[in-house]
Length: 263
Image 1 (cartoon, rainbow, N blue to C red):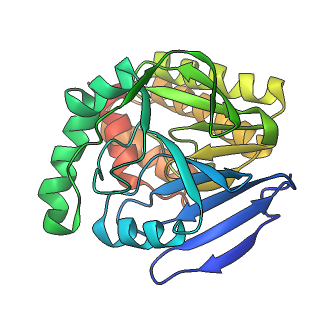
Image 2 (image 1 turned 180 degrees about the vertical axis):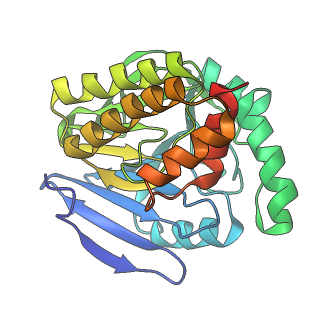
């Protein structure tokens, strides 16, 4: 499936890009919110599983209205635990570490920061997990998934559409890279995607990407390590990365990465 092989449904704020695989569809919701969230709906036989949740109240209302004629069988809550007013009666699935990430860990810190930054338009309430799951295969609403636990939460393979969901990729934007070791771990993960030959890579903050994008990100991460080894401090690092990648978005992510490489 080509990453551009979709039709678009324009909504009041966001837009829905729909990929049709025949017996199964992928609805990729581009929220157009202040943190560029993406939410994914896998639909089969009139039933759907939602991957992640919108967290701004206007998006929550918009997506709930879009789903009015689709039965939501469950929601996989991995890295984005906020937005609990969205489909409150639908079963919520997460690994134990993902639940802790949103309640007490790094996810909670992000939710607190967003609440301070955005105020009342942001739904800071955290989804209550009704079904704690473990790594491995699981079927929800007649759709098969493979749960892959990560340090913070979990990634999701969707075998029927040969896709994988992870938190972040972004082939033309900066990422939060917590030093050379973290870069190596990201590179290894991206190589595994290429080896498995996924058609689509779904992420929380970007439209669906492909294996060419994964290779672009690998090259970027390798170069980040090289630049870090050649400069003396965080300012020099940011200046050189910005010079080599002038069109990349995510300057705040680059600032954080510089802080990790030059703590």
